[in-house]
Length: 178
Image: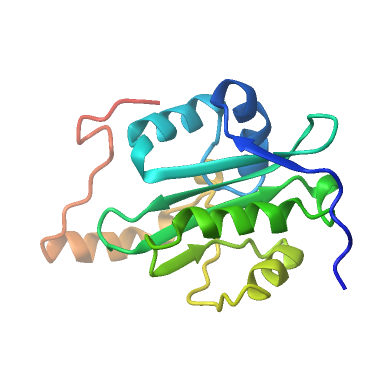
């Protein structure tokens, strides 16, 4: 049995008001830095591709959001991001956001894709209850180059260079950004 929904309203996403809430939600799981400015840049890059809403409680407090965007290369494929603040989960905001998103993309999408993080089993359960199945699985990994010892690869690099492979750096390619 589903718990009753509290007084939750949906409204259009307002970048100046909402990105301050959305950026840390996405940054907690994203491998790339997510800031208000990066969100603004993504939104204005191709605003016709996005549909978005925000859920707020009876006090006007941000609870969560969704946005969708259409694939540029695969007609009918729509990608979904839906996140509810952890302390606001279980109150119905996710259900309401998802139902609104379904209605918004009806007739435009043949496939919906959602990314779910391993650290959030409740998110996986939420999306599986709506009929999604795992299509692929990825693990983000990071190598600390400051402490990396490349000496064990010296002989391999020499053999590959002798075979015609070219090794360079971003600086060698002209990219000197820090």
